[in-house]
Image 1 (cartoon, rainbow, N blue to C red):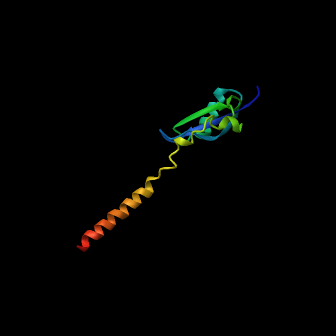
Image 2 (cartoon, rainbow, N blue to C red):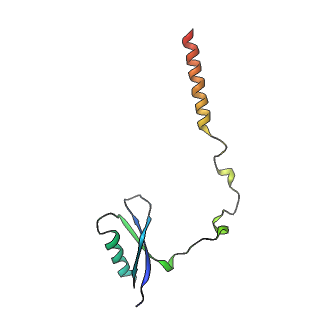
Image 3 (tube, rainbow, N blue to C red):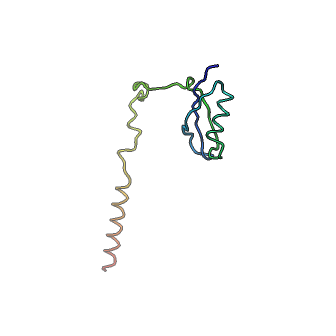
Length: 103
């Protein structure tokens, strides 16, 4: 029986994202789950594990596939920065308070 490479993803706590933890070599999915549990879950450091055969993962590395099909730059909030307006309003309020205390 030939061994396959299985990628292991783990979640540290409920609600955390799944992150790649490493991989294990095993001839079948049952043994891969056992090895993954031993390597990445034995000490209780993982809340959840995903074990996926490496050959079942589809890789997208073509830049044309990763680029959005349409220009959606209008959806990015780059043109309207409230921080500057808030700072100007605070300065105006401080100036008005300062003028009122002189009278």
